[in-house]
Image (cartoon, each protein chain N blue to C red):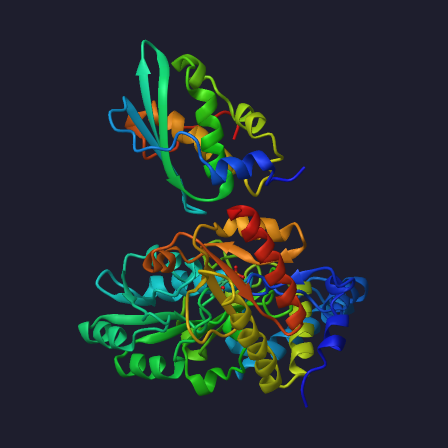
Length: 131
Length: 397
Ligand SMILES: Cc1ncc(COP(=O)(O)O)c(C=O)c1O
């Protein structure tokens, strides 16, 4: 199956939940120095629930579509559910084969979200399982 | 006389079925069959360790290895004892930094680099306690000679380490002029010739450079072997790099003495088969005339630039490139572009090409590079442009 499947291209061309995050509870960001992909995510948390999410960024179709797809999935989840997300969940959401060339692009969204919950280490990438 | 490209292509097994469009030779060149055969034949008939053993096979292996040294020396106008075999250009530059640099550079000394440099000609110098100063480039991608003058004037410059040909912009540096200026200011010059070596005839004595490094694998030879040339008196004065077998004169329980050059810098079993392969590559390339090669590659370059300019918004990163060119297209990430055309067996390189300071200077994080070798054709370029247009349409639809 093609990496550039219709759902990826659709989210890349028409990204969902883009925004500057004014008034957000927390913000996380992450860059992928080897390709220059960049994501910033803004989260609104209320009573342990993620009620709103906005994101900004530049980069390849996989990293940007990945964030867009993940954003739709995350809104309405509890913080615990968000923190429990694993890389395989992201691969499943994308639904396309992610090889060794592109896994960093695909997982950038998850790193960015997890970084938002670890502001002390926001310059450091928060480890996600088994990468 | 001109080159018979059809015949040349037939010598490259990987190009056999004509489905591959390989425009990434600046990363590594493809290998002609004669190089692969030479290495295979060496393993089948002459394999032994070099400089170790009295049996005739060891002698055969030693002769083959030393013949390769002579070939590499003759190829760049050096003497055989001035040629050190390394694992590649990266190791050659590290050898200079770790050996000559550690012995000769102090805290206030300056190593001048250009913004064009590959990480392998940056990091080894940053690992030393001496200072690094940067020679800028102009909008066309050429080194700023006034910037160089200014740095030399500030004093304390002990070394200029500079590429002969940018692996991103394809711009040549005026080596002759740089070397003269450096020497007048009492500085040495190390040339990173990883890219230059395959596009231009080099005579290190005429250039009068002090160090000169390149890899075998960009020169139609195998990976795992590189060359360091240094002037004899420099090599003689430099401390050894790695310690081990072959680099010693004598070892006692108290210490060791060094072998003569170049063995002093070749600790351990060297890449013997790779040296044989490099020798075959040099012989193979030397059958062609450098002016014919340049003419062929420049014709491809001119044609490629013409075709690329038909792509809306495409921005070329330099002017008058040689060997390779790089570009950006607004809204199209180089990784998407090269991944998509890669699915059609068309190879371009994307990313920062191991030149992050240059990309930062250009205000971009990544670019796409197209590079040319002796076996490329206009048809390669045509097929690449068609695939690029398809990819751009898919991404922007
Ligand atoms: C300009 C330049 N310098 C140095 C190198 C390093 O060569 P290698 O990786 O073969 O050691 C390269 C190749 O990538 C290069 O293009």
